Length: 244
Image (cartoon, rainbow, N blue to C red; front, side, top):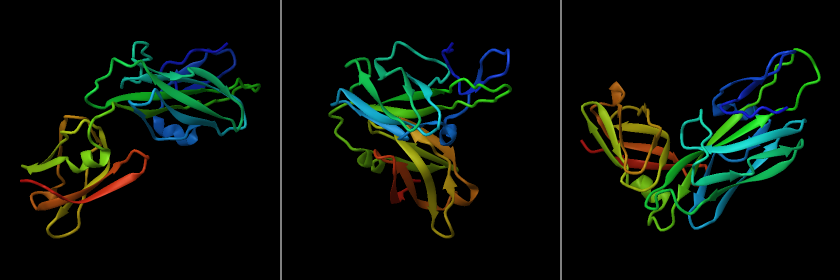
């Protein structure tokens, strides 16, 4: 009998014991039997659906359960205006399958990008051996719904970020309608090597601040940063002016 996982990512099977689960972060993707062939998915608003490939890299058949959430990984909401299909499937060893996101046509903003999360929970076959520890990884990747006619590209949005340094803090403001995910941000002082600055992702219309490393303040004049582009690669932007 199959138990419906909620926040499950590790399944333990012991003789006479119930199926138990505990959450593991999505960095377990490298160890997962079911591999999602993307680090993110962009659902373009002009298209009725977006797709990504799921592969079974193991020598055993696996079930896969899929769902979306809006950021709380402990929930399986059923009221989102977007779904992922199919919600449950079986993959034979070496088999690939296509997952599709479908938007209801309303319910998400049409003037800015929205962020949801794709969850893929693998469900391993039962073991015929006693005292076997079975791992089943849940993979989570970002899903961006990008409405049509926003009038900008991700590269333009990244280049339009406003950067300011004040009192040992770095403030960045995103006036664009797109999310920008940083890979690295590095201050470029007038003398000496630069140092990494801690930033993750900035949402549309958001301003975030972070403490500058001591060696960066107050001598940093410009910075450079890398962000994840629409293809999942890294794009670099150099010589970004830093206001004081």
